Image 1 (cartoon, rainbow, N blue to C red):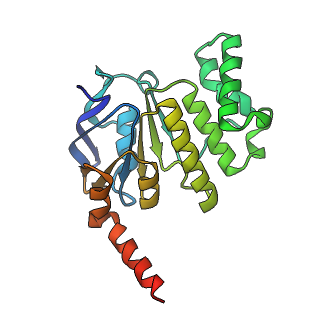
Image 2: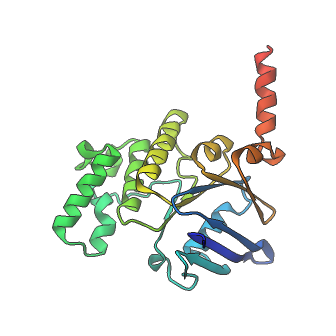
Image 3: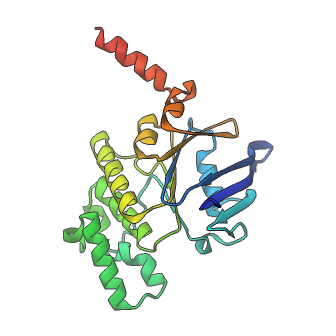
Length: 242
């Protein structure tokens, strides 16, 4: 059985520096791959390669179709940044409906789908508000709704909750897991936060020095000293002895 998504021979260089070469991995449908790595290791560059937003090389297969030479808007892939990047001149309803409007979706279907998405997001009472009237968590919910309403084949998550406070971040992680389960979302998440990788992933990998290592299960991932899990355990053991 062929994987839902596959990258073969991924390559990217900035000037004389190689970010990664001959990088490859695959993803099962309906799963979230959490890629952990330190700042500057190439996590964002990898997502942008997959999305078609940089000049890297590699074969990108999605549902057995080669989309490597497709422009970003034709790949069926949506990229979510740390910032919600909502349109300030549009209200919440129109921000969520934006992807349907540019696809010229019939108005009755657009209205129905957008109302249903707002209800799923728990934002039905915020529909007429502008972006600057929302909290950070609400803005990210709107961004997720705008992404999901067009039914992307693959969602790319570039530390999407990195700018939120601890409590809101945990709530948004729970929200994502619920939405991913209900909608069968296939996603690649990159983060430097170990807890976020553990909490949001169904599969796990570590990116370092241009090499991506996938782990067979969560236990193997946490046991790898590069993840920092063992250091975390030692810290709390020492703390509990105080």
